[in-house]
Image (tube, rainbow, N blue to C red; front, top):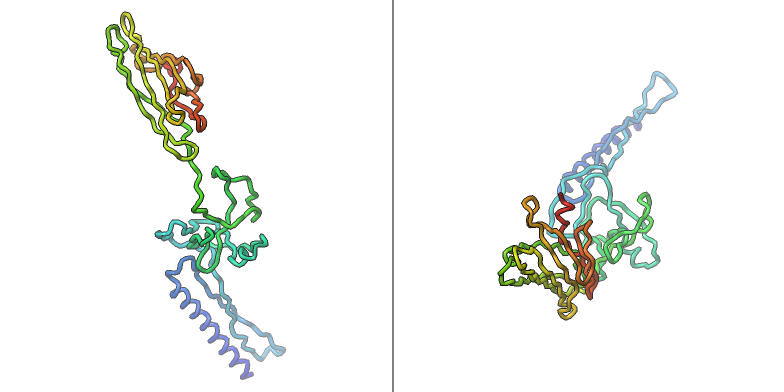
Length: 295
């Protein structure tokens, strides 16, 4: 009888010791990134005896619970590859030893935060050996379709600092303000040149040169210019020449009236653009839609 009573008292002391340990851990890790607060619960232990006139002390049982769903505030850092989840979700990671084995088997763990840095091989990992996992991206940055309800397709994230992919120019929007007086009868017909920089497939800087030569009318004003486009990547060769006329009416004065291709790609009246075939690829030149299509 006395032994059972002593055991109940010892169980109570052990339960309180576990609760104090949990509180101490929570306080000690209050500034630890990703730490999950621990709670301690108590349950009574009841022992039933054979005699209704006697009572057996059962004591208390303790259980601990990690609140892994808790979300703390996001903390800014100076490392661009530090990651944290704001809201629901986890980051998939594996152990660096699984990567070193080279057998392609990656045991997956889930975390909500991690200070990832690239190692000598470019693998994003933490100091404790957690390797960030992700779906592989194609050279153009697109990602193929992978099942979202499984870990299939996940690979260790690598940053290849020595490899770069050029981002060539694919679209140029052109807006100019040309003097209508240069197309009037008796004008000198001065031409205007506008250089536009673009980047080729290897990331080299190139230039398109737009020259606007006015068509001087015999009487009145023609409001028509010849636009000649040359490309520095082709040694200054002409890649397109167009007759551009502007509307002179009061309602739509100054807008495009017509664009006629003399050489080069055709003008698309629906999109207001021209596809220029250059040495390093195609560039879409956006001139704007005709005044008649904007009315």
